[in-house]
Length: 186
Image 1 (tube, rainbow, N blue to C red):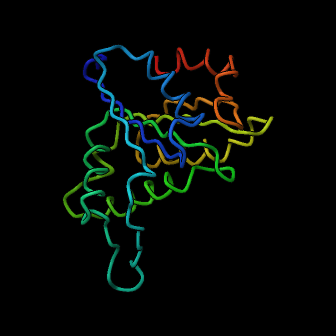
Image 2 (image 1 turned 135 degrees about the vertical axis):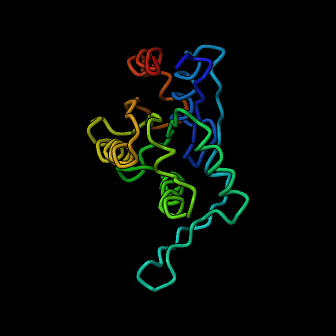
């Protein structure tokens, strides 16, 4: 697949606009060829219905496709060849907004005729995160969550770009992470 055929969906799960994680992701995205399609969605700005799993209550799951927002997220997810989860480390895992997005997958997998998992197969899932601790191993649960998600969906795992930053703009002083960002998507 050529770079002009790739379509990157950046799902920003931060509760703060232009935070460290988004800054690092944008630095990595700058390195993509100009012909590569890029779409950015800020999950915190998009109110999502919670996934209700009612399989064991006789009603079946409620696939979250009835709201315009869920439809927009579904369309963007299926249209992308590469999905980049841009989530700060939040209690050792993905942010709440990111988790709510991933919960939508549970409903989409059960929509008759959608074939969600089949359509996700072969796409690439990436992770960009910034943590505030001194030990990058604290991000292992976040990375594991996303890597297992990719495996489950038959997706390729693109990898995780980790950076350090606690206060606003701190990641710009993490020269090692900025260096890794230059080659992250290549």
